Length: 123
Image 1 (tube, rainbow, N blue to C red):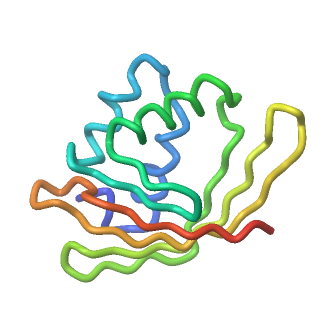
Image 2: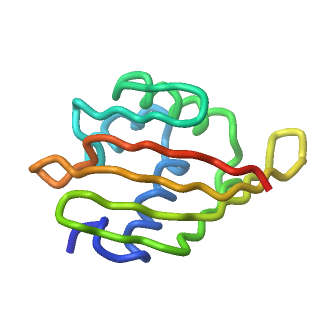
């Protein structure tokens, strides 16, 4: 079953972004994201290489387990999907950031994520 078909597997796929050896970030992400991947959020647009660098930085600078995600909704229509998830992140200074994210995306023909558009509401 593809990780984008059920809440539990999609949530596990998203959580895997924040875990793992920073040196393996590109190979880890290559399993989920297409080489032509783009991500747009409230502040920036990233291509695959820039996204890998961003996730690598998170893996290098955040404590393992410091980010928790809970998907509250996941919808699929063919290759398009949408999710709404809550997150809690313990920052390096000890403060806690909470957010609600609305994410839309599309899968490439090979089943990997082709693009994501996200908006984040800080709580």
